[in-house]
Amino acid sequence: MAVITGAGSGIGRMVAQRLAKLGAIVVSVDVNEKGNKQTAEYVRTNVFIDLHGSVRVLDLFVPSIREVRRAGGVCHTYKCDLTQRDAVYATFAKIREEVGPVSILVNNAGVVAGSRILDSSDGTYAYVT
Image (tube, rainbow, N blue to C red):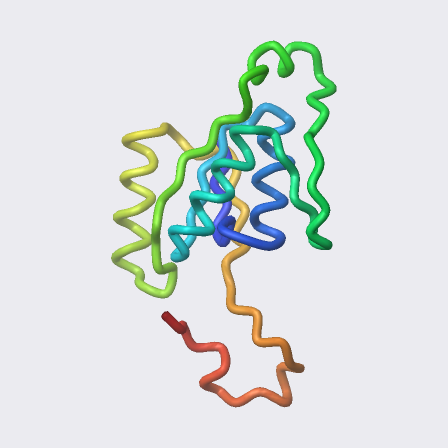
């Protein structure tokens, strides 16, 4: 099982889709519930949206995985604000209880500011709701 933080969009979503394509059970952890649901839908239907917005159906090229994932990949979603320590511990305890032990963790969550770090104020990288 693979947990990807920040999987509700961008690179995290692409990692979730690729790992699902390879047969992993994916857990998408993001503060953005709407993005989380979209990622899960893309994983379940084997639809891949690249960073340029192009849509294509993934080719599940490994025969044994093709059989297992014929109806699509497996993706569980959890909302979590990763800036809150207690929320992180609670969410990961819930994941272990409901899905199982974590084999892979891709810690991808972050805020994209769209500017050079030295040109940004301290508040630019604070969590924004």
